[in-house]
Amino acid sequence: MDSTAALLLAVGAMLIMRGLLAERGIIWKDEDEDNE
Image (tube, rainbow, N blue to C red):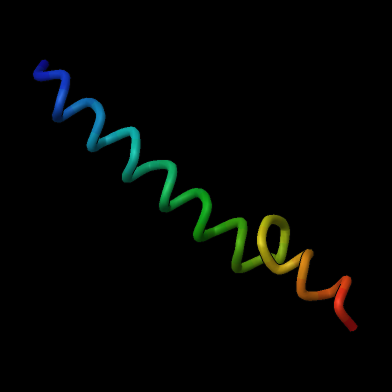
């Protein structure tokens, strides 16, 4: 398997997981709650 393809797959999976977690307010949206 080409290293570039593996890297793209890893990055894609990370972005998908990060997006799913962000929807639940686990990662980035926690900072927004602190401001209120």
